Length: 483
Ligand code: GLN
Image (cartoon, rainbow, N blue to C red; front, side):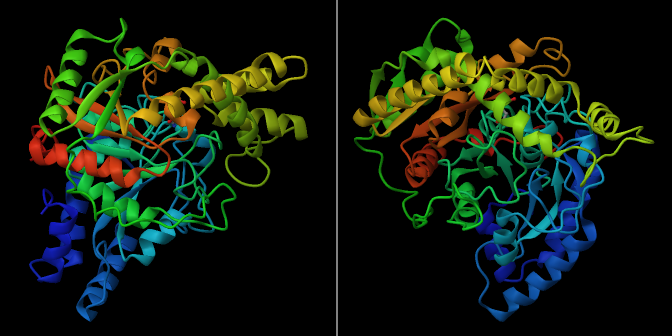
């Protein structure tokens, strides 16, 4: 059962080949069997089985939607009523949200079953899942290596078949980079497409939730449930949600693909470049036309991002003060001591580093030099994309400079870690949608191809991903030991 696609699972449930309770039990037992991966922070066994029972009744009633009875799991950044939401942090290790995130509500309304909450870098800051208070996640393809981050638990769970599909969030690459490292399909939607209500804020102008699944076809079904206008999120966009599955099979004849020259320059590893070129060759066979595009400001994306994201996080994380919720230090001497020790004891090193950088960048006298400048650079980068996308349908390139690295390999060097996001971050600055699809292997480790589209072109991206997955079988490979 664990290798079936979402539509196959839905068909199996309807034809009573298995019940949702049986399906849920099967995934729960795989989760227990593969605890070593550390993909989950919480497993919500009891509520999952209750939801599965309810779904079985719904399906028997005959008017259930496509995700009814299907087990999924949520990144532990989405607030879930009654189930702990830690955001990977000691700060929220005791936090049980009094409400559901809109995304979680949507899955509940669809009758989906939530298996539990997935491990992640603390407050979504990181590229390896090594910043989690709950310890690193292992990559099912090479258990001495990282799954990527911050949605590392999400990617590992899908690759290891611990859940058929899951959610992730992407502020600078956190859906696409772990999807690439774990050989799965991950889509970061247009900023504003998926509600951020109840999704714990890291850098609000960049954060966006999206689907992570084995194929573009499955991701389409997930996005259908996640997307939509939400009055509770002021940056959510009031635009109708198209049918994401309808155009999956559209022909790619005449599709114009742009290759940003800067994505293929000196910094790209040879094997990585060759694998990406081979994937692009496959698109040529499918009828696409390829051309080079120039995006001169791309190289400024990382510095601009680390100023903006740190500035926004320093403000967002000021709410964790030991007073209203979350961790509180023992025996505070006075109010200042309460603030300082609660924050000092409960935030990890990377979160502290970003709060320090962000506070500095926003401080009087430095604001113009750093934050304002970074926002200006952000505009230049958006303009680069606007220009490039005016002549082509999609852009393509690598997701990451290399494949999954070993646990511990980059932890002492934050700059090396930040460079992981070199191909993904600019897309968040521009607010565009982008997807990572499995496109091959280097030394047994998965490689992701990135497909970037114009605003609200998710359906096109999924079509471009699906046609490739009809022609190739990279997305069907299963890591050894998880068949
Ligand atoms: N790795 C990037 C960071 O640490 C992106 C993280 C993300 O997308 N949440 O900020």
